[in-house]
Amino acid sequence: MVEINETENSEKKGLNFVEQLVYDDLQEGKNGGRLNTRFPPEPNGYLHIGHAKAICMDFGIAEKFGGTCNLRFDDTNPVKEDVEYVDAIREDIHWLGFDWGDREYYASDYFPKLYDLAIRLIKEGKAYVDDQTSEQIASQKGTPTTPGTESPYRNRSVEENLDLFERMNNGEFEEGARVLRAKIDMASSNMHFRDPIMYRIIKHPHHRTGTTWNVYPMYDFAHGQSDYFEGVTHSICTLEFVPHRPLYEYYVKELADESYCPRQIEFNRLNLTYTVMSKRKLLQLVKEGLVAGWDDPRMPTICGMRRRGYTPDSIKNFISTIGYTKYEALNSISLLEHAVREDLNKNATRVMAVVNPLKVIITNYPERETEMVEMENNPEQENSGVHTMPFSREIYIEREDFMENPPKKYFRLAPDCEVRLKGAYIIKCTGVKKDSAGNIEEVYCTYDADTRSGLPGSARKVKGTLHWVSAQHAKDATVRIYDRLFDVENPATETERDFREMLNPESLKVISGVKIEPFLAENAVVGNKFQFQRIGYFTPDYDSNPDNIIFNRTIALKDSWEKAQKK
Ligand code: ATP
Ligand code: MG
Image (cartoon, helix red, strand yellow):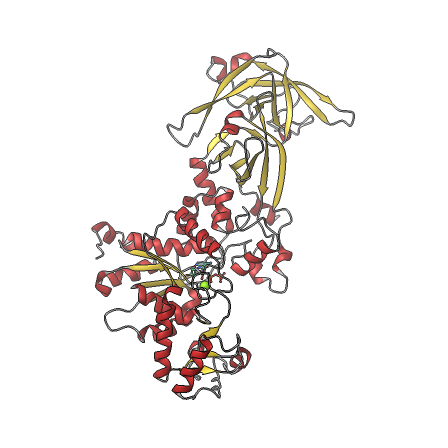
């Protein structure tokens, strides 16, 4: 029994339209006040950010109103399905922070009941075996404004239909030779009512039922009934199922009585710029080796995002920002990236890493001396504490932070100019050493010993502050810099080009020889989130180990893309 407390009542205005419909049903006492949703993935690929939107709705609404949410694998097509996907789907839902308890179901568990229903419909003259090919059947469908043509097999006897359907399931006929169709109305204004296919022959072993079946139900003949068998009260799905709803209700009514009937409600799919979301295309990218796997950090999959360093909160916050509507839209990937930055800004540990190192020698600092300076772990979080970092005579700074002939208002390091080394001293550049080609090899500086953080001279102000690491103490690391996988804003609409031609050739850059502070090397453990100061957010990759430290760049500190695109 669902209890809606006063807070929930007063928050009523803040409900999205699906929550509003569910709330109203609960208030009216429908289904005895019960709320049961389901998330129904087909185990034919890994979950992506679009599925996350459905998961947040299906599990979120159950949580909000004290109901339950089933996980149901919609495993009705053995050709494309695999247990690898089942396991990955479970892991991803858990990682997002949702749980289905013991309510894990499989559409394949209902194959016997669905078969019985099919037999009953045949006996009642509501279904028939059609010997035509799928092409012939499609050519008779008609158009939304002209009626379809009835199949010459439509009026077979019940006995013949029963016999043929049974033999279809016994494996007597080849795939495509026959189908079972519902006998509804070839002139219906709803195309889905024009004698939809209920069963087709598939002679491929199923990952759960093996070779028990040679006929498999179509989505439309399985979904609503599965909802019904499980006692689902609200079957929430995406907008492309709106025209399927009458058929959903038609089949469910063959089972349901007055007291209970699941209700289908549709919301808009998540579409993202610079992204393809079709599982078929994502599978192609994986199979053809165009990405490193389903969990390649450039993939829009949940596991790819996890590997890249996105957090469940950032994904959930993004989804709650875009909301649920009844209109299809294309959401900017920048919004997702913004949510990721916001969350990491609050939670990532600040560290020093120099991606493109240039050596700086502090000539008035004693050789062989090392002192430890304190670094704040996270200024956005009280009590996040500090860690220490070694300072010594030779350090690395970012090559981009030095210019021999700087323009005006250049606040980084340049001859005769001063900068602060974050957390340490003010230094002044006194000279450079160049190789024979004129490239700067080393920069010479002096430091002002009074300016160390904490000393009275630390109040002295200079315009620029640089990140740095001690050369002698730094560890080497590799960073993988990811960019958007596609360089076209909406790959799905550019139908005249193959989507693989739209891949961004710059989507992965690998930089080795990155110098990182010892604290970062010690904490380079998968799952940890870091902000490399002034550079971006990074997380250790699965391939990383203490002898070969590898970071994924989760996201740059600022969104440079939108600007670059507008130029
Ligand atoms: P594809 O068409 O790429 O195979 P699908 O929608 O068939 O994807 P399913 O595994 O059947 O994938 O999806 C499970 C649930 O997730 C469905 O309820 C579906 O509506 C929902 N879903 C899938 N893609 C999106 C999306 N982009 N936005 C919101 N919900 C989605
Ligand atoms: Mg589907």
